[in-house]
Amino acid sequence: MEENNKNHAVLSARNVHTTFHTHGRSVQAVRGVSFHVEHKEILAVVGESGSGKSVLMKSIMGLMPDNAEVVADEIRFQEQELSTMTPEQLRKIRGKEIAMVFQDPMTALNPLRTIGYHLVEVLKRHRKMNGKEAQKEAIEVLKQVGISSPEKRLMQYPHEFSGGMRQRALIAMALCCKPKLLIADEPTTALDVTIQAQILELLKKIQEENGMSVVLITHDLGVVASLSHRICVMYGGLIMEEGLTDEIFYAPKHPYTKALLRAIPRPQSGSRERLESIPGMAPSLASPPPGCPFAERCKFACETCNQGIPQYRVYSDTQRAMCIFSDEELSAMEKEVQ
Image (cartoon, rainbow, N blue to C red):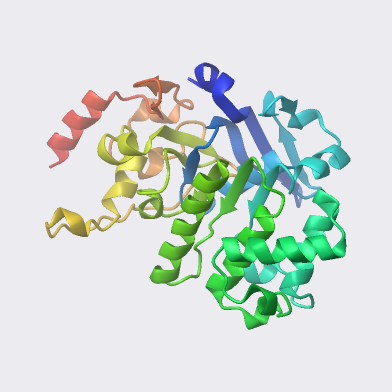
């Protein structure tokens, strides 16, 4: 499926492994992930905390610490192979062509510098603007992300902004260089529901206006329902299932995806259904299980599930799931359980 879509991809990655070497042990955070992002597409990468979502994207960006080892058969952005680039070559692409909005807006912004300083520095470095030009462009970018009185806001410090405004400022920084690909890492974390909706609507609006591709990292499937075009569901350092948003929500194939969906409230359905939690804990990636990482928590798991990582079952040109059971077999087992 990845091969079929490679020609249309702004980013394609094949067999990415990321391992942290720390305190005499190795933590396999990403364990052989392949995915692609198409032009003008919003791809959501969803999974519980510790599933490898953020590590995968930071590996793509070359933002890993010194104790991390990233190995991949391919990490290709447009026509450029990122995995063989030097740190200096990667720095020229980061921010300018690929930008990232980080998870915590308070720690991502320097509290001793004004909002204007953050924006102007990016514009000077990547677009070679002088101070006056950068100042003018910074005001325009703040307007684009919906911050009122941008001339005044440029002179303020991060602590003078609310959480939602800080997140908008981070998005503005990412947009300064008109990137081809924007990676948003949990952009709605710690924001109230109303502000969450505003930030997501802003991302969608900007994506459509600028014609860029977006990767949205989140632990909340409900957040991406009306925003993304495709979804990758990660668990235990692997992609458990991938498909169009409608396929994931209305025809999920993997037990983990189905369990995540059962944990989301659906007020529009009109029925009073009890939400189900997923029992157990995510596996330790310092000693990952030899088989399916979800087997220990899966009510359909059998002995074969623990004997090796399953191959993907391909259900369509856009949907695949890493499970030894077919959709028909899982449906039959679900009926038995009920």
